[in-house]
Amino acid sequence: MVLNRDEILKVLGLIIEPDLKKDIVSANLIDTLEIIDGKVKLRVLISNPAMHARKRMSEAINFNLKREFSENLIVDLEVAGMSSESKSTFRKILPEVKNIIAIASGKGGVGKSTATVNIAAGLTKLGHRVGIVDADIYGPSIPTMLDVFDKKPDMIDIDGVPKINPVLSYGIKILSIGFFTEQDSAVVWRGPMASKALTQMFTDAYWGELDYLLIDLPPGTGDIHLSLVQTVPLDGAIIVSTPQEVALADARRAINMFNLDSINIPVIGLMENMSWFTPEELPENKYYIFGRDGAKNLALGMGVPFLGHIPLIQSVRESADVGRPAVFQEKTMISNLFDKLVVNLVEQIDLSKEKNKKNVN
Image (cartoon, rainbow, N blue to C red; front, side, top):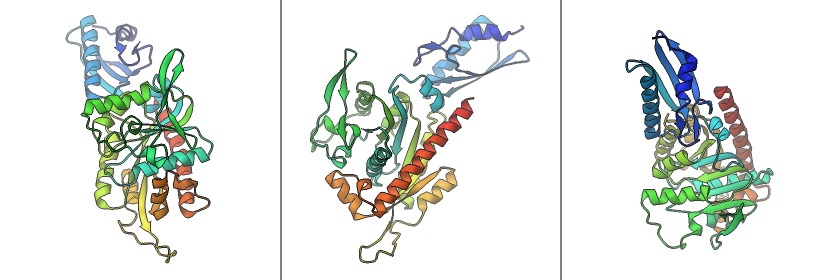
């Protein structure tokens, strides 16, 4: 049997990528196609990196090729998730958002939401258009930290379709499950309900044009995280950790989760929170309560950019409690540290996207 490249592509052109609604040939999803000694070596990209989606695509390709050519045809096939840059080309959800970044931590209580709020506020100081999705379904804290806990989003008509209009605070657009529940009520939802609620904050909301949309994830590596990467075309993830070993072990798991072939989201960087404590009466002293440079060393060991240290300072907690991000403080040490971290973050996001472009090309 003599195999012809054009004939193989003709068969592959009958197979539809379910999320993109286009055939895998015209969508440029054929990454590799080689014919060697009567065997077909093939690498195909798909939008959804989940194992069940890759298995269905693999079965469809094998079935169609063997039906057309021979049951004995040997197909060396790899089905892989698309890169973030490739996904953005086909972006249906949030097409006007330039960068979608998840902020995660393996462990709770490390200051992930505080980091999210101050990074968002720091980006607005640089003139960027910013939004936050509070995806911490069971413990939403963003409304309190941005002083909108008593607000409710209204509805807006977009081309005849009703959409949720995010709440605005300090120039930041915000959606949180906290807007749709009573402040003191426990959210008791099973995984599918929580995942559906999260999805609606992207698909049923009007975000408009944004430079950055930050997603404050719940701690851990569970259903919410998997639903997110299957629904939203993430451009990268930031990991937050304290320097202590218990938190670092969970941060390591979070980094490994985003690096899985089935998820394949670039880790933009790792930031260390609660790095040291300086008493007001001893301004020159630093006490490394949770250990020293643990997150920095982890980043170095795992080949992840280190974004910066944020010390344990009372004013950060006070700012969060009153709903005004610490980064807005006038020329303080903490605002300067957050400003530097945000500038570093923007550089790392740009570098990551440039690297993805080269990999795609």
